[in-house]
Amino acid sequence: MGHRDTRTEGLYRWFTRAENWLDERGKGAWIALMILGFVFVWPLGLALLAYMIWSKRMFSGSCAFRGGLQSHRRAWKARQGFNSTGNTAFDSYKADTLRRLEEEQEAFEAFLQRLRDAKDKSEFDAFMEDRAARARAKADSVDDDATPA
Image (cartoon, rainbow, N blue to C red):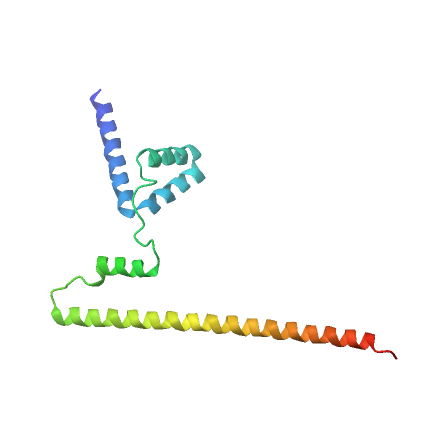
């Protein structure tokens, strides 16, 4: 009887370690494992889905980056952007570099938006010119048909 308890206890410890490992990696790891379970052994995938729903892993937590790019940047800064290293010269350099990179990224995004706007305008202008040319050609053909020979 003692041998069976040891085996069960070892299985329980393995399961707990695996659960903690997956929790550290987030909801995506759980979902990936569930998909692999469905692909290779469908009852395992179904069991993982049931466990995720039962343990509230499927619907718990919040996406740190919900709300767009600005909240993504704020979350990134909060996690690792401005942690002090203890070296004030390096911290100053890092802060200046990160600020400059953010400014460059914003300028680049603005440039890309201007490029998209210019492309949209040129495509619209080409459409309008083509439409006007077709209307002129149609009017000319109607005029040619209407004039007696």
